[in-house]
Image 1: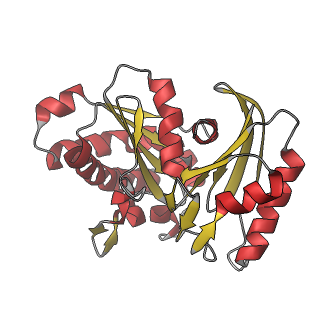
Image 2 (image 1 turned 30 degrees about the horizontal axis):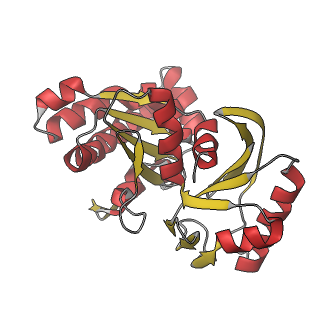
Length: 274
């Protein structure tokens, strides 16, 4: 049995995993923005200690940051101000005497999602739409991280005076004073203003996915994270913008884009790290 952990800017999910099955899970608030590094590590360690059960052989953790997956060091974690350089593997192994594996959260989601997609596609790209935007790449069933675990950090590319993440994550809605869940309900009820916001969000998503296609020429793109729940509201506008901005129509005709907002995907992927 393995403990899989997905650390986000808003919540932290912990799950006991056997094979690819989630046996038990909890969700807790993420670290306060004002918390010190020591505070966060003590908090995380205490939550793990309370959740651990006999028989857990390893811990896998996904973090929204660049990581050194060999040494288990976290660098400049997004939305966790105190996490600049964090020896997470070393710290947790010293406390629990269990092997700990660390990787980028989007990479963990990609591993979990690739299991659901199945073994046939050669290139699966996942885009997590949460507090930020994360991209993970699985090539022929194997995670592609790049030299410094940054192969998927393309949401940081400059775009319209900011970056893609500002327009292709929860930040799009927060920056406009909008609640995506409430907006989704309004759009489902026929509210034209709400539908217009999602069309605009979809337009940005389509432009971003054209970048994904230029970079990775995917067979399948899986959208995850909380905003993936709203996929029906921005799907059409997304495809329209993608077809406008990516010229290789034969590739788009073969491309599958699916929404998978299942939050268990990331912890299952984290549990599979080795």
